Image 1 (tube, rainbow, N blue to C red):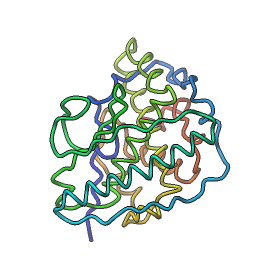
Image 2: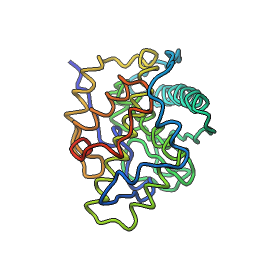
Image 3: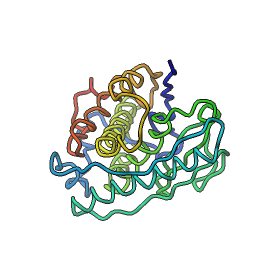
Length: 255
């Protein structure tokens, strides 16, 4: 049976490429109130299934991985443009760079996986050796879905609010706020999957995917894998951004 890898860099963004974060002793106060309200209030309504042409990936083929990422990006862009329009909010697409190197539009990137660069409103996806050796579709797809969640946070003012809280906060409070940010991006990925998963052809049952996420390595930036799985599933089953308010959630759900 194929081993499903869920590396931290894929489950969530790599910290150095995101604005310095934000955390307060009462992270509920970070619940962004700038433009986010319309999306936060959406807990129902029509969420039609997307029909996205996402191609196959060939083992060892960087070209097929690039084509897959481009198709995933087009699918995510379409989905979020429609969600923003439905909420009466302006939407703009991120710049998407797919590379196997370390240089990008937001400077030199470290580590592997995917990154979101707020200042440039850019998603940088790095094709890794692991991707080439074992290009499991859901692993690869998540690098797009999660980073698009950070772009949604940028467009709705969440990242700006996060930064304002993070800078003066204690280290402990920063850690909690970082978790809240990451859990919300996971939830937004789940909302996207609620419409697009069938088109992606993930190659794994949803419950099995969540089990794999729960077994991923824990990191200080992203929080407990079981909570990442919880929020991803909440977005998937809720199918709307209103289910993704991690800012007022109990500490145990974002640890």
